[in-house]
Image (cartoon, rainbow, N blue to C red):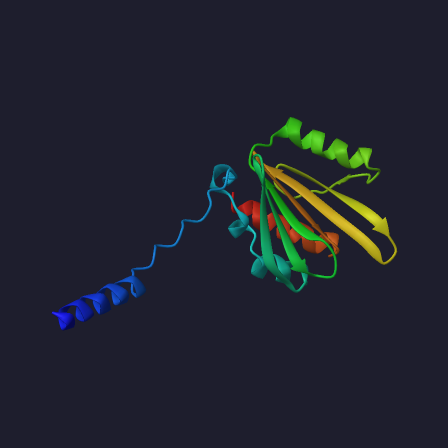
Length: 162
């Protein structure tokens, strides 16, 4: 009888030590959903970097209402692509006015989408170019220290995907 009690005690102790682990908690839900399913996979670092002749990595995706902002590490200065999925001629004109209000004097760029312009911030060695183009309801902004020509070619390529 003593052996049975000892054996039963051992089983209880072992049972307490070898419980099954709880399943992992699901990832927290996010309130930010991709606008119209559009994300930074439309402008990955391995496409944007070579197009701008920059060594970019680690794309960070930020949802901004009907737009997605793709920011990249590397490249020596801020590099980003912003894809707006609910633009149009009026919204595009408002965005252009924002650049004018900041004193960046946007200039038209021919041959990109339905309409396009470029704006420059800074001077000398520290210059940030933004090229903005619209095709239908999609507006894309490419901002970087790369040349306007490189950013324009990238913008044409990105707009072709819409």
